[in-house]
Length: 400
Ligand code: LMR
Image 1 (cartoon, rainbow, N blue to C red):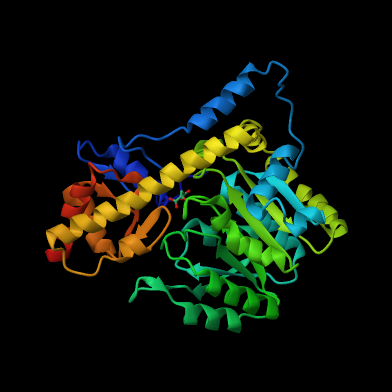
Image 2 (tube, rainbow, N blue to C red):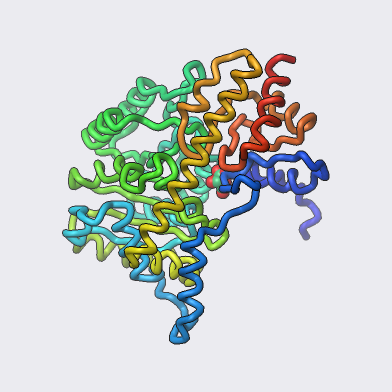
């Protein structure tokens, strides 16, 4: 009965790792998926995560009962505090509901389905370009996906005018997906002044903001700075949705731990929203897993562990910034034609190089360097040792 099925293509991002794993070359380099690597090119488990896990193992009172549908309640409270700030008016007024979800993707999907079921507008605007999974998540959630201008290939920066025009032309009430910081795939973020203009425009048109926060702490190295755009939208008293992921900033990729927060107008509404979120979650996966959320709760509740985490996070962010400088310098030393200053201007895990699919494919074939076909490279996958190899490949492809 399944004989008619055609072979589905690999995922544009995760499929890069599949291809990389098949390559026997000793010089191969995976700059596809946004996953942090050490200077030795190895995945990193944070020390603070090891400590938290040890605490959990030592605690013989811990049981493995089902969590409630909304997940680990302490984790939810701490996550809201982390993203909105301890002094957030929404937390003080109890007009927020937070549910534990399966990392960023799960949070976006639950939020998308909730909106498709209960919000009066069914269209969501996403940036052009955006993370490849966004359109699929929201389409399957039951929303209609449209795009707004965001990136300007000419400047390799923000097309702010285009963004304002497109959001200004969106029907009142439309949902707008905003990357809270470290835009994926471009590494281009609005300035705080531009965020303020976006906020004013969106509020004046009654547009609903849905933040995707996958990199809190990774863009600037500061958890508070990276959460600022979201906090601006919450400070004005309006509603918004926030999807949070701990994949990158705590290195908990495979634990699938994240949260969806919905900021409402009143505590009463927040309570009813939560009751409806439970109806979305229960038939989807019943309740979320316990382990990853417990690790996060241990770290966020303990002042010392929290401080230790911020230091480890900053070290990861700094190593990425240093990779940007090294790659930029390596291209300069080689006299590689073109303006490569965007490598140091863009922020977060990714550089949107401007290389086209044919150039990417040449670099993969000839240099065993793997990246997504849109020319995005994960700076977190680079090290001082591999920068020269990447610079050689870029130089070769642009001078060929
Ligand atoms: C990425 O963009 O590489 C990451 O967010 C990982 C993923 O799931 O695609």
